Length: 304
Image 1 (spheres, rainbow, N blue to C red):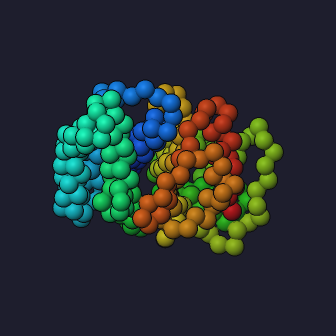
Image 2: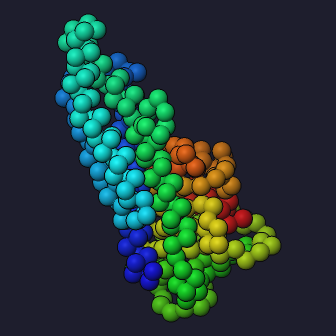
Image 3: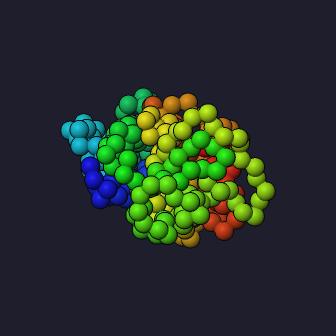
């Protein structure tokens, strides 16, 4: 895999994670409507199912590109979920009428949608399917960048730690070109600057020098960061942008095991979703204030 392939992989990963996050959001919206004092119409529930099927298709395509070794199983599971979605409306409409007339039909359909998303067993639910895809993709990413690529990348040392961050710039993340050691001041990627330097408007001390020389890998642009590390055995993956959709900042993290830097304090204000082999956490916020503080705080923990 060459640097261009790595860049395309990161772009595809961003789309996959956005689709996965939106699928979780659809389930959360359905729960909110069901538990609240909302007047439902059938069109809302039908649209919810249609949007879920659409997002599942996009998610599977992204995973197909990122994990070619799991293609057959991906499409087999996806076909099963699509078949359930296609029969869901008819099945629940019949049950809703039998249970008490058409006025209950929308609520029966919404209950069936939530049950389909959650499932009695994780391995047969939409939620479990999404979690397995996320786990598989990050497992693949953890071993996909060859040493020949990493070794030729420029790097910055995180001040006050034993951490080195190798940088593959996709455009706008560094203000210089070349290889070898770079001064941290040459980092122009907003999220990475905040992780390395902290927020300049806050007085935040760094821990003392680390015992080792852990290496992390960062894919950068001006406003977006894709970070993973340590390179030898990644325990944390992060996607961060200061100016995403709707002008909001986003930080999304995945840990394949029990989180280290993702302590309960560090994740305050984050939404969390477990997967079969790990956990995803994400947070949206105002890029000018809120997300700057979040990234500065995370940097002190991640690179400690």
